[in-house]
Length: 110
Image (cartoon, rainbow, N blue to C red; front, top):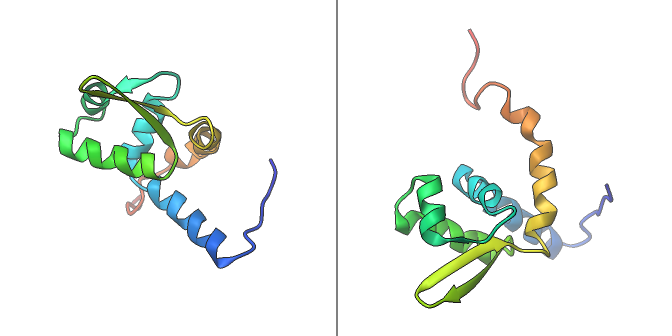
């Protein structure tokens, strides 16, 4: 893995924005759901079990951050992982799986 050190405040700000876009479980769920396929908003909404409005907000964050691409077909909008950024982040998220197997954040074992 190539390590890139941020060299400016602008790079640090961009890195923080990208990490913030990943900071919600529903957004991570969306990224993995569209990993190998393009999906309509309705299918994504059904998968994440959120309202259409909440699903659309999460999709907007991921799209604005460059993790998703979208295209319109008639009245439907289809989303997929962006080749530039979305496909690059999934291996790193999968590496975090060991952390997910531990105790829930904020809960202590007794």
